[in-house]
Length: 120
Image 1: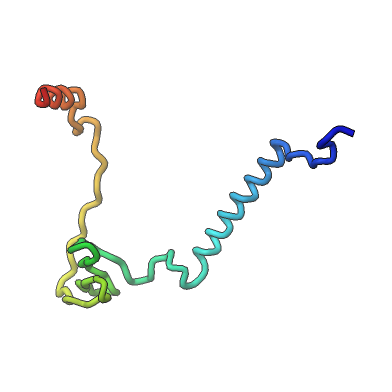
Image 2 (image 1 turned 180 degrees about the vertical axis):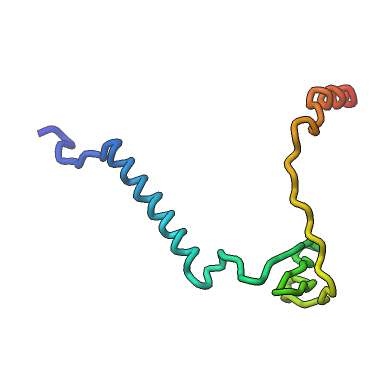
């Protein structure tokens, strides 16, 4: 009897594909379940959203929160979150960012030639 004849055979390509599909299905199923669990933190709270935010330091930020019908300016830092001001009028909505078109982009060939001339 040759050595290794009793060793189990490795799964074929079909078995590996089935295992991959099962793992992907498990990941998608758990993600779906996690989104629906209360308190998962992945869903935005109803009636609460961040309108604007700006960093003030390494760990400090200022943010405008929309809470129901009013907006609050809050300071966020290592010591916690503190309401700084209740805005009398809501901030204007920022226009959505537009993707640049190819016509508005600078010509790469010209930029490269200028840069090479400047460096030499």
